[in-house]
Image (cartoon, rainbow, N blue to C red):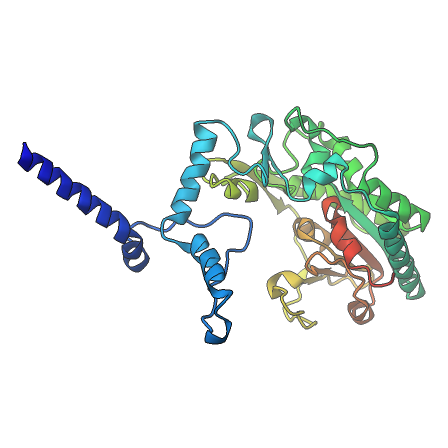
Length: 381
């Protein structure tokens, strides 16, 4: 009996020592394959050891270690799986809301926008008024037709898919305030939200990705057609593509950015759509980047440009966020030169690019939950 107890003690000691050294073994030999981090934040960087700055080093190193210790991502994934599969609740309720039929909604900025909790103050509205009055006059002086296109969040389009307890708290929204201000200034507003809501029940497929906060190509095409509808009022004769101009193919796909946050991208399937044109496209990509990329910007996102052989068509310049990416394949077929600029959610006027491009049409395309960034970057207050 004594021998058995001694053996058990040695086993326990061995297991304890193995648990102590396993993180170091994992860091060196990667015995267990790494799991990709899916948190919607930047992890802490490793601090530089400096004898002249020793006081803040321990705290900074602790933050770094907490974000990078061995098996951390495995534990994070296990935590998410247990919460979803065993307890049926969202592991990150501060980032994602799980709606009906497992429809996912982004919390960051979009929830408060839907709840109408983040209305503009009078001071903020005055900043916007001054900035957009300047934009209107600046573009008018150069013969440029100006439009502001507002993209709706998934909350606005599919509120019926939200949990019962998610409902607007106040009447009136930040979007309503901004639209009223633009109409006061007589700036043309493209109301994509109304266009999408109008057709969402007549199109059998979903217009936003189930596990992502972005619209899919179907939603993007509806948005494109509304943009073209409004622009064509002042520029008749521009070609607007129809659904019948494409073969539309649904594709099974891994879940989008919200499923990735929950560590369930492979399990939470989604549907994407491929638009294959039935016509021969004559557009070409502008390969050479004509403008310097600002510091901290990604060159592959900052500029996209296309040209058509038909110089009689107008030129368009669009400043946008990620919702503008999926309308590019459609817009480029309607204008002689189509330039898309992503200025990292600032939505500035960017006069040097306007002077260089000399567009006929200028569009600011902004997601309604990102209007705060637009206001914070007003240049003419």
